[in-house]
Length: 347
Image 1: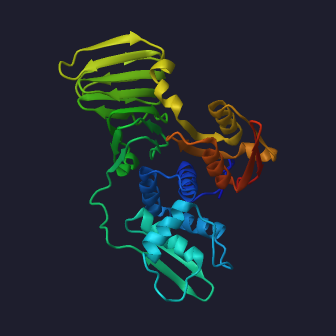
Image 2: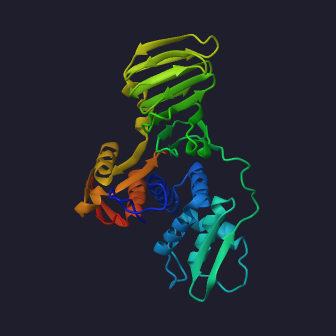
Image 3: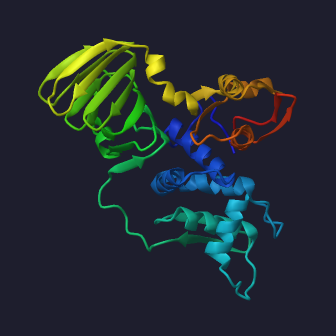
């Protein structure tokens, strides 16, 4: 599919949201999407990205062929969810219809998608067995990279859980609740402080990067950039700066601050490969450092395309390159530690 260019291209959706959708769709079609990523793709499709879903189908479908090369996992989902154990003796639908239905069933929930057929009018594929959520609270669990409604990003560690309300962000309240550990990079907005609630401990910032780790009897906050205020709902414990850390005892409300190396204290995130709205040239450098290879693009203009993507499950180099190539419509080759990305487009 595509990555978004960094020029002022018109877009009906939030730029980072579209990039995130494209990334998740590419991972899904490569058979590498985790369960939380599938759920996120479901939520995006259900909340305004059904047209984008249709664009992916149009771009990848081959209606002149009754067979389509799909990843093994996607084929298994078609067999399980569409064809079943015994295939019915009915007229075979085009492969891309099965593909679309398989994706909808695999993602679950209530979705709508208008699919084109050159013999009939558009028709809807729906699922109505799951009721819509009673409120808009979003709960993310486990290793994930999230873009919040205000453009802030969160990299969640294992066993972390983040809860927030998209509607409250739109109404000016930037607040999340965290259990476990996560690294935050907050979009600067002086008029709307960002708050992270970890039990009775509240971390308040305007725009900065910091790590919060909620343990059994303490909360540890480490600052990588900017100024962070840590306290309770009624009292400020301390304000800490880059390479400083505060540890709060949640039983006694006692705390202490210390000078640390933020890079060392947040080293857990270095095992993950995250592209947060960066150009492909920078992404190529990060891939090279992560996997010990050299990466080059045959088309110089491709290096300026911007992408948002995350690889949090120890994916191998082939998986990363496959997803990256699908996002920009390119191909790749590897020879003697040199990777060549061939073709592709930002459109």
